[in-house]
Image (cartoon, rainbow, N blue to C red; front, top):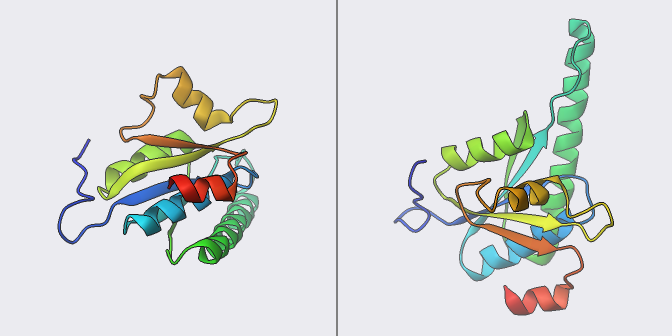
Length: 163
């Protein structure tokens, strides 16, 4: 693991938010935006296109990948707009294709300014979500940087007081 350079001259501490289309993801995005704004940091929003069943003819595979990329761009665009509503932070938008945990690790390794991973925990009966569950099972060792987990039911008012 390369050392983090988020505090070095010419660098900014980045909060990495994994974006998907779940309701709780909005909480993680808002927390990261507010925290970055208050600490003169930055936000990177990552959307990972999970590998699909691309065992089709080449033309079908290309269409499916193009549709997945378009959906990822639309979702990131919506989250960037929401971020503009709550902060002055303009996020860096990243789209990757692969297994989510692997792509998160790769991005952290590549970008030495990423210092904190921000995830949201679902309040639903199905559990907190796959990434949060994975971190809990591995005792927090799933990623090489600190992880902040934002509960889905954390209100805007409470969040504004604690960031």
